[in-house]
Amino acid sequence: MSFATKRWPICIWPGFRSFELRLIRYISLFIVAALLLGACGGGSEATPTYYGSLNVTVPSIPATLNPMVSVGDRSVTRLVDSLLLPRAFYVDSSGNFVLDTRYILSAETISVNPQEVVYKINQKAIWSDGHPLSALDFIYTWEALDNGLEGKVLPYASELVDTSGYSDIASLVSNSDGSAVTVTFKHPFTDWRSLFSAIYPARYMHLHGFLAGLSFGITSLPSITNYLIKSYTAQSIVLATNKPSNFSSITFSDGTSNVASLNATVGASGSFAPSSAVTSGFVRGSSVTSLLFNSSNTSLAFRNGLAYSIDRSSLWSNLYGQTPLSDYPTAPPGNNLYINSEQGYADHQGFFLVGDFAKAIRSFVQAGMTYDQLGNLSLPTGQVKISLAYDSSSPVDAKSAALIDRIWSYFGFSVALHPYSSTSSPQELINSGQFTAVLWDIPASPEPSDRLKIVVNQLNSADPSTFASLTSGEITKAAEQVYPIDASKLYNAVDGQIWANMVELPLFQLPQPIWFDHQVGQAALSVVLPIVTGGSLEASSFLSPSN
Picture 1 (tube, rainbow, N blue to C red):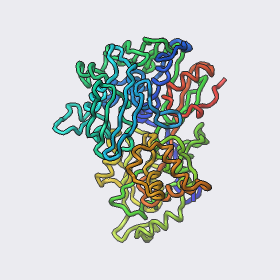
Picture 2 (cartoon, one colour):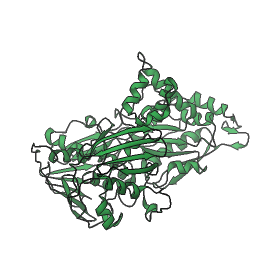
Picture 3 (cartoon, helix red, strand yellow):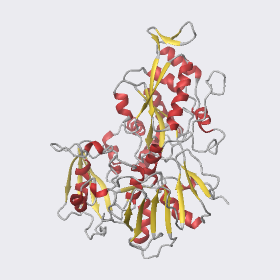
């Protein structure tokens, strides 16, 4: 049964995502810009096509360019860092981790128990201060981010963003000449490719400090790509080229200075280009809005009932009906087979797309509820109380929470909405035991979904630790070999796991608008789009340029 019938409460259209969500979206939008720009000048004899200067309008200028510090606009921070700092892997347009061989020649798992990964550093990667990229930089990066080092308390620990993964490293050892490092993990860590996404210049950071070395006014930060910081103020960040590149400069501004050969604007996820835009389009968003349930103080039957009660198709219609996003092809998303990845994320079986009123009622009855005199579902102890937390900085999450409130209230439940700070961890909120469910935005990652690994393990009796060295594609291939004729059974198996414990329900994925205030030809568009999307999103989702 859908929202359209009289059983469902009337819903309203909510508006757009918030400033903070916009910031977080930028993180993955810009993560691989350095790949395309840097490749033009590093190791290539061909002269890149020159397009003058580029201005990218962003919501605000961050107070730090340190990608692992929670102060300031971390999204733009990650964008700028991708044009200055090296990294081990980047995310391609298909959502897969790809080794960045400009900096790392190879990264291989050589042992499973304990898990050991060897990074071989490209000796041609030289910082602009003349020092080569070396094990020294890896060691500094790990020690600066590992808040779990025994006997060591980082003075800026409270300002760090999530550094999980670095604290899972037991040791990091250099070879004799610093051209390779061996990372040993405390336990199997499947997401190891996500580590060292930004590698700090150790000598500079030791001299200037982990925080001060990347703050307003710096111009001496060593770079390893085609660009150097020319100026860094509260209004703009200007990067100037030091090698042949597509652009003489790239300026990130808050909109106060936008005079350039090309002017691009990245809008908030779920918003639209203004009518004045000449060339515009959408790219797929970089996170999935999901409903995280508390499995410790609720029964499976009750959680299934809450999930069955939500019709995601109508939820999307109430959010974006009568707008350019009403029929967007990638929304809402589907099963959790690729909950951590852009690639392959689609509703294959319709398990979650349409709500089921009858199954919701049946699940609630199985949870021990009965109808009271008013026709509402209740427990013997009284009215069912639900606490739903949502990100206070996100208007879309707030509106979605209000819609879900009306749905669950329809069954007679008492629903209390609790806004939380975007700096709070959704899992911490669940672990506190105070909330029934939490709305949150899951960043996309190319790592294989844990549920997919479980399916392959169950079917092939494989050692789970072997998944530490497998890519998403390899996991998928192994799983689909089990169902060579009807691969949809694989999706059924994974979806069945979700309903088996119902700890998380994906709701929707908002696309990101990009527009230009002038006509942009296809050649220039092919150069600019990878910069403003970071190459991690599907450029094919971009609409045909307007005329």
